[in-house]
Length: 344
Figure (tube, rainbow, N blue to C red):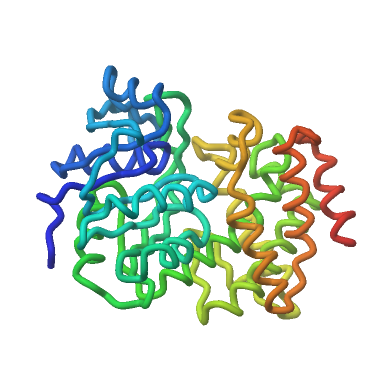
């Protein structure tokens, strides 16, 4: 098995995910460089270190950090951790900097691997499922809400030396396993994300929205639509932590099965450090664009191609866009609006 211990690793995007992973890899003795577009964040890391609080206590790390404009090649293993809507530009910038044996690992939400593969080829693209909860609270400060196993895999399902080496390296940051079905995990997260965007339309804790009858019914409908779309793309939709996409499969008892996994999700959030999803933070706190087009937008687009109705997801997509554009607040009436537009 190849060893990445003496191989320079570049982490592009030093926010919640990239910062957490990069800090722990550096702490484990790997040659890591964090790259970020935010001058304030990079300066904070350089001057004070990268502080990570939360589920693992309170520690300050001191990884190397540079601005994106100062990045130079040749680059070997490159962990891409930017928001999905920045993927295309990031890959354009990284492509000429990659070494002949360099490659990009997508540690992101959505189906970014397809975009990366189209740009630089399958042999230079590695897929990954990431689901641990973390938030960048301010420059130089990350809060880790909960841990979750990373799944790393080749896009064609092969178990290659490089994914084994990546498993060894990433395991210092978060529990990591190799998978031969990375697309199953990515689509599983879209089934989860369908509910995630519904609950993030309201300025209330996740558990409170799932406890609400209308909130839970919309989550159930959104994830059921996403599951049907996912099954047109993968043979097996993988579980996302305690969230089981298969519970949303069609059948007479689907409602009861789906509610079981949704209530379980709510119970997990009740006692968590994080009470909201990162989507909520983007909308409420950071007031910036979310990854809704990369996740819910993908569900709607593929559903349209495959003839699967996605009325709840399409309505959620529109409502999130209106919140992003400042045309809509984050009140409970958003649930009624999604329901009305979906014709429920």
